Length: 159
Image (cartoon, rainbow, N blue to C red; front, side, top):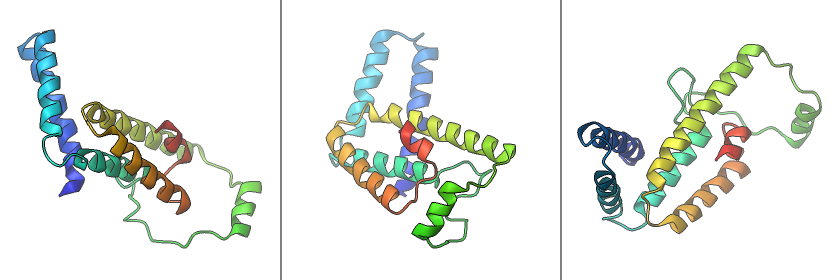
């Protein structure tokens, strides 16, 4: 399953870094060996595959598909048609008052998205095809913005 590859890589990298810190007391030569080995491992197969999987993972994260279990994912919510231009204008000029709990939930969601982005960027450092990642990410970004599928505009700005 390609959806689980990036989270598994994030977990693997964290465990390898922990082993390097604990077993080798953070020795710089072992750290460099880990970096080189992980980079070789990640880029050994199809050249653009790690870039594509990472871009898809970030796309799912920014759409809200990979949010923590406490909040419903977009696949669990009923599908609603996009609002018309008139209703969008009315929403812009007469915003619904927000409750404090809504603001707290949104902040917590943005924090978890930021944490997910940071973890994904720890893998990005090892990807050789950074230009391919950029192309995949831009394509996914355009799709999210055009179809209004982004979980949060604030999260998009963090990415």
